Length: 143
Image 1: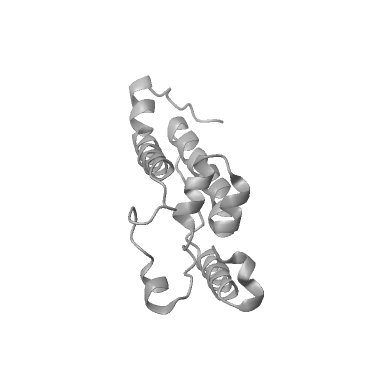
Image 2: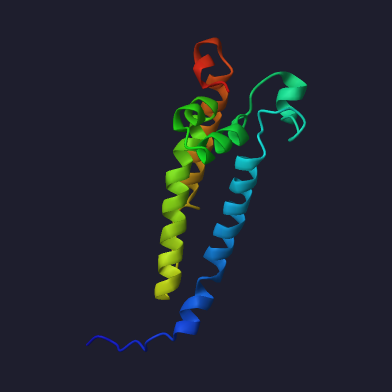
């Protein structure tokens, strides 16, 4: 026998969307700012501390310029500046959409992304990317 679940009121549905919509608003505002204030012009943003101190590119180097390029629909330039960021954008959008949909439906947002295997895998990807972009044969990954 299937249990009867009471229908959710529209106010409850909207209230459950506040967190996903808040995250979307902050991310959109940040992307709009980076799109409008060119990081290619000196003086607008601070230099990466690791790059400044060591001359090595961190995994995030080129991300601001990649977001700026994506904001201007220049995907090829964004891929050249930071391919890891460009690869992460569809995944992040998918996870956000799943969060918003499940919140709207009143279902729990379960994720197993905090499982150690996923975290170690992500850490390995970031470290490999970091090392390769700082080697002579990986210069194509440098911003």
